[in-house]
Length: 369
Image (cartoon, rainbow, N blue to C red; front, side, top):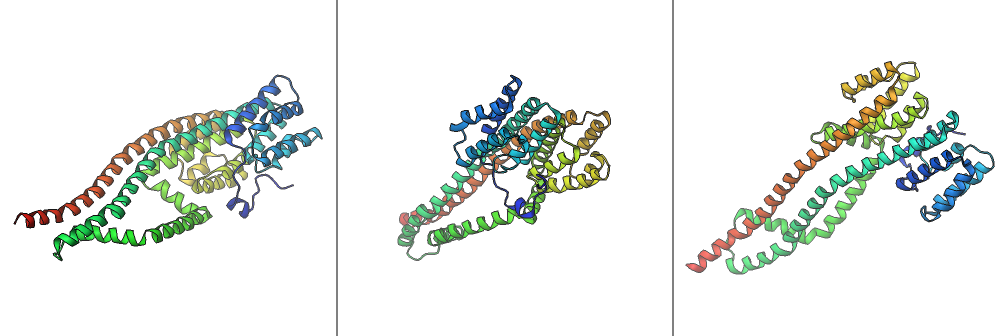
């Protein structure tokens, strides 16, 4: 059987999304922990939850996966091995945590810890997304208004000016705006197709290892996204590693899982460097410092955690601190984006209005004369 963390290049590039939603899996995990803590057997708990979740896991594959797991556990198979055979429903991190619970004999505590981690990670993700929704909506509306003006309003003025000015030259700004309007009107559908094609190509390139590395490198070094991107990556690293180590997963295995579950390519490659050093008997803090990705204060705190034997707790504290800093960074970024969008909309709409108003002055003057 292949190691759950030994993934091929094809698996890394085309890794499928989990078919069970995070909030449903979190509830399933927490209830399983509660049932085991109440003294029920694993088989009874799994069968009860599978029947209860029949209406929650509406996807056919997820229901089939749970039924197979129950059947295999009833036949004597370890829960972790059964879940590992369902990679579309359970992540490598989830399987490794379950395996750690089996080895330590504290399955209910590990499940509770896993549920807390999943709940915290999901809330963290939603917080980031919700913070970026408002700027995205405003920018979309601004672009929509601009396109409507250029495609539907400006052409009407073009016809009026052509009739009233009778071949007289128009101001340069008006000519430029009308040229852009004419281009958008004639080639709008072509522009949409080309934009869609370019977006598709960009998404494919972004999913490749090289493209993802370049994108993440730019985001992690380019202001104003640098602080936010780095803090999100460090927070996820510390939170995931703390959860795994606290559950009893060996350090090297935990690092492999962190590397696999990382969504930032720079962080992924940094963790690979740490893995290589740890496999040779070194600690975590020194190779982390050599990557030059982690802030020096984080490296020092991790070194203290290693020296005192309280690394999981130290990682949890770092993660909590960085989650708070991510909140602050998001607020700062949104507060910076909002005035920029207002200025952008004011400049674009103002330019169009001025360009249309200038010929009107000439028309009024000629009528007055």
